[in-house]
Image (cartoon, rainbow, N blue to C red; front, side, top):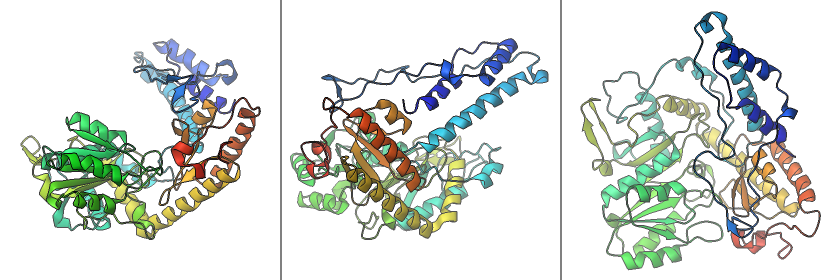
Length: 487
């Protein structure tokens, strides 16, 4: 079955039954070096979801705790003479070497998640010997001297120019992930409007609804159009009964599954039509992936602080290609005083969520922004959009249901019938849909390999009339569906 060799190797590497002590290390070393992939049974995979997230009429459940994919490398205590024999070091080196081999293999088949794997940060390896921590406020130096605030503020200033807000009018920081940006943006909105209601489309990232739970906020889920963008008619219907309370709105600059971009101007217009003045609403723009792509797309609507928005966040490990999770969060300086507090221990102030922050991430972002610049990003965006259209056209040409939103590099298509294939290509799935996200690291050659395997797989999965490709008309529209009923 497709993908067995990769997963089998992972099973062998992550065997959790490592024995303790030097003799065990030696035997494990021998086992590693003589590893026979054919002797290891393939992993179990989840059952295929047949329709709308259901299996045989029953809802698919994810069990908390250790599931069938969990593997473990046991941590063992070194023997007294390990330092002189070097057995432990040799064993760990072999494990890491085999892990690197797996990473190289999995990177070749990475298509369903928005990470740019095309980067080279060899020049920054000299900094890995330092514990760099950007404690507290980026704009106020603390007593902790091993920081990278100068890089962080440089990156923030770059994004401030991109989103058109003056240096003296914004506040922000480099977060530990995209979710933290959403948590912070919505928290600022909640602090500005303590009795405000959070409005977000049902296709918003799960972190938005996590924020509502964490902050105990009243939350209204808004319906979406077939494209995945917010349905402002439904938004209006949800606003009107709550006109007496301020509105906190999450606007998606690229939804998680379909890559849809909410119409920011129409959202603002809807608020105004419902009687909301600009001092009675707060808009957070979740630009996780496309927030950094849209500024480089001709005729794309602008995300700018010249419009009545409160904050914008993007991920740094997605389109930029930072090797560790991180993000950028910007808000208006006037809003941040409600969050900021003095921290005597740091000799600084803090309005961040996490406090301690990875000081290496700003350096990686600074390095990439300097190396590529606006023109470099524009070139990469154009490449992504061009290759996404190529993928969508080839899927449709092969009779496979597929949709590509305008301004997006996320191609939605029918979920492959074989879960092993899904795992091999690391596809993100929801119900009968799967998607591929075309990033700068995704070449036409990689897409061709994927398409050839998918088309070959479908000839096996659907060789008889008992099993047919799913209908995606309800998910992506009948015009994009190639099932037996709509083709």
